[in-house]
Image (cartoon, rainbow, N blue to C red; front, side):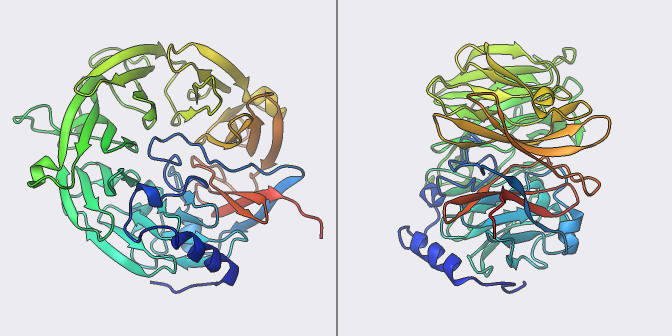
Length: 456
C-alpha cells in the first residue's frame, strides 16, 4: 500500500475536527450530508450533493492522468465520491485503483496492490472523518484517512459489487452481479451473512443486479434480473426486491430476509430512487415475456407487499439513475438513451413537470445528449444540475451546469482534449474558503476538477 503522496495540515485538521464529533463505529450517521459521499450521494440514491456549484468564470482547474490506473480510467463506473473536503475515485488499472485527492488535486494516498481492476464498478463510501470503503470482486476494504488498512473482508461467494451502501444500523451492504448480496459489520468487517435471491427453493439460478441498492432505514430495495449459470432469463424476468437487514438476528439466514418482490421485465438501466415510501425504478419491458418497451415504475412499500402507484412508457432505455428534485413541488429527473431531453416527472402521477433540451441549451455544433449521472447541487430553492453532454456525430464533450429554475445554462466546460474523455459518473463537490470545485473521472483519461478561475 502506498503512503501519503502529499500531506496538507489544514486538510487533516479539518478531518480531525469532523471526526471528533462522531463515534468511531461506522454507521449511517458517519456519512456526511454534503459532498456526495457514496454512489448517488445518499442511501436513498437522490443524487443531491447539498453544496453550491461553481459560478462566474469556470474552467478546468486540474487534471490528474499520470498513474497507470488513472489512464486506465473509471470506464462506465460512477468514479468518485467525496465528503466536501476530499474525493476518493476508483479505477480499472493493475494497481492504485483507489486514489484520494484533495481540493487542489494532490494525491493524498492510493490503494497500491490492495484492489484489482474490478474496483471501478463501485463508487467508494467516504465517511465524514475521511475513512474510505472500497471493493473489487474479491474483497471489501476500509481504509483510514491516511490510507492505512482498518479491515479487509473476503467476498468468498464471488460476484462483482455495484457500489457499497450502508443501513441505518451500520450494516455495510454489497449487492453483486454474478453473486449474492453481502452484509458486513462496517466497524470491523465481520461478515454477517449473504443472500441469494431465488424464485423458490428449486430455482437453478438466482437474481443478480447491475445497479446500486437503495436503502430506507434497515430495508434494501434492489433492482434485479434472473439468470441461470450466467445466462439471462429468456423471458427477461426481473424483480424489485425488498430485503430487511437485521444484524442482531440469531442465525445467519435471518439477517437478510426478503420482505416482498415486484415483478417486471428486465433489465434496469437505473438504480432505484426512494422518495418517502415509494421506490422509482425502470425496466426494459413492462412484464416478463413482453416486447421490449422501456418503462418507469413507481411502487409504494406498505410494509409487507408492494403497491404499484403508476407506470409510464419511456422514450427509450434509461441511461442513468433518477435524481430527486429538492424543491417543495418535488418530482425527479430522468433522461432516455440518445435523447437530448432532461425530463422532470411528478412523483405521485408520473406526469411531466419540466423538460429541458440539453442540445438547444448548449448551443454547440452537433446533436448533444446527456451521458452521465445527474448530480444536483445548489439550494433546495434553486437547484443546479451538473451533467455531461456529448455530441453524437463528433464526440465533442462538455460538462455543463443547468439552473433548473430558469432553464439557463450556468456554464459549460469542454473536456474533449483526449479521446474517451466522457464520463458516465457522478460529480462530487469539494469546498475551500467557500469556493466549490466539481471533481470527476473519465472513461480512460484520469480525474479532473472544474471550478471558478480566481485571478492571481
